[in-house]
Image (cartoon, rainbow, N blue to C red):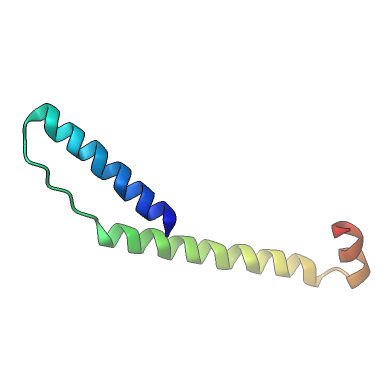
Length: 70
């Protein structure tokens, strides 16, 4: 969430700077569909990554897991 705020603010600053150079009005809009798509893709990739890690850990014994982590 913090990255969205910082990225949107940076985009607004660049857009306002560009409008000063071109002498056109500043029209800033946040593309909600793109934000929803990126969040959806990140959630799907996170779930796939957790599944692969848990699949690998389920094949090991508890002592092997402790040996690798400590």
